[in-house]
Length: 196
Image 1: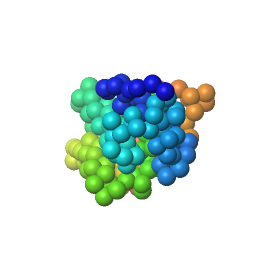
Image 2: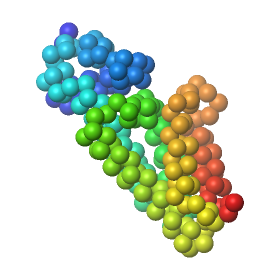
Image 3: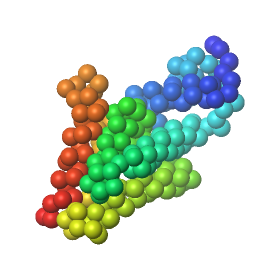
C-alpha cells in the first residue's frame, strides 16, 4: 500500500469513496473498502478526513459547487433572452449529470445519510442551485416569455428531471451527453411556455 500526500491523496480517497458509495451506498461502504480501492491504508485516510461522514460531505459539497459553477457559467454565456438562458442552464445541468454521473448519483441518493451539519450545508447549496433556475423562470414569466402559472414548481420539476438522468443514462446508450442535454433543454422550455 502506498502513502498518499496532499490534494492528490485527497482526490484518490474521494474517487475511491465515490466508486464504493455508487456501488454499495454510504452505509454499505466501509473505510476499509475505500482504503483498499485507493491502494492505501485506513490510517492514511485519517490524515485527510476525520470520518466517513466528512468524506461524504466533501463529495456532495464539491459536486454541488461544480454544478453551480457550470450552471452559472452557462447562464453568463447564454443569450439574453429567458428562453436562451433557461436552455443554457438546463444543458449545463444535464451535462453535469452525465459527465459527473457517479458524483451526481451519490449526491442524489445519499442526502439521507448526512448528519445535521452536512445536511444543512448540502440543503443550502441545493437552494443556491435551485435559485439559478427559479430566477431565470421568474424573469421569463415577468417579461411574458414564459406562460407557466407555477414557476417554482416548474423550476423544481426541471431540476428533478435533470437530476434523475444520473440514475439511468449510459455512456453506451443511444444519446450523447450533448444530445440528451439539448433534448432536456427543449423539454424544459416547453414546460414553462405552456400555460396549462
